[in-house]
Length: 345
Image (cartoon, rainbow, N blue to C red; front, side, top):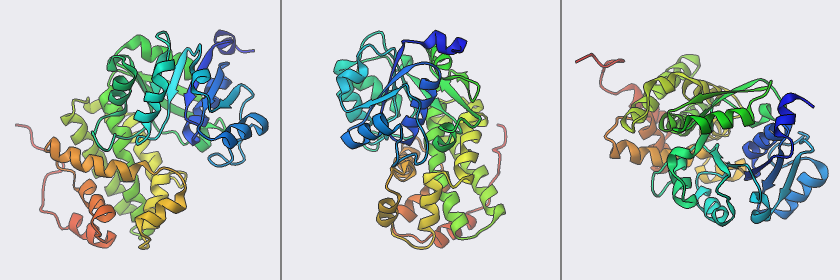
């Protein structure tokens, strides 16, 4: 037993829900010596995890550590948990949090690893959890960064960031997750980390479209760079630190999501490039594509905060207004000339 495993022995972590990312992070915690109780709505999925140590739908061919036990019983999942990790899709986060709230103990500290906004309210996930769990938003930790579940589950080197306004909470999460294959940094900028994690999924949709249309490396480099500018522009308007966008949650996550076929958002964008309807793409994916929901939310946020986000606007037009990808590119390339960096006043 390692020193870390000894420190975590007999401690319990609850993970909600058992998608690919939730399962991968449950594996990290189990490898660190936690007993992990993994919540799912699906009885068959729970049985597969418990008897075969696999989550075949989301992470096929990957063996799970023995320290993970899945169940559909929310009360037992949260009973005596030291840590509660929420990894529900953004559209389901409020419902899952509301279901968990009666069973969450005061001593349990809360982490979330979901990258998106709530569609109706445009709220970040930490705000949703704060409202439903009755906890200060400042106490909730956000985990984000460049981290494909398929690589994390196989213990390939990965580096992420945990953010909280309360430094002791961030450091506690850092201690819980960090090991030789999963390096964790802390950051006090919760807004920046959440905004970066959400908006990069939009840019990844665009990257998939660009690759699907065979626009080449020049176009993709421009998309990532100007996409990062949009992330920073909205983030700053919402109160984030510009430095966050140069780090793991910003440029790090943007690069990995826009350049890898592991990315659901990239794959969805690539499928849209050949004219496949959005509904068909989502049906074929079989998993949540956060970038689609986030595009709608970010489009509304750009109007709310009066922030120019041309890439987001064109993807919104492609996804929801019937614009063709080629016409969207034409609109972007034909915009009036402007500065890359605004002059100092």
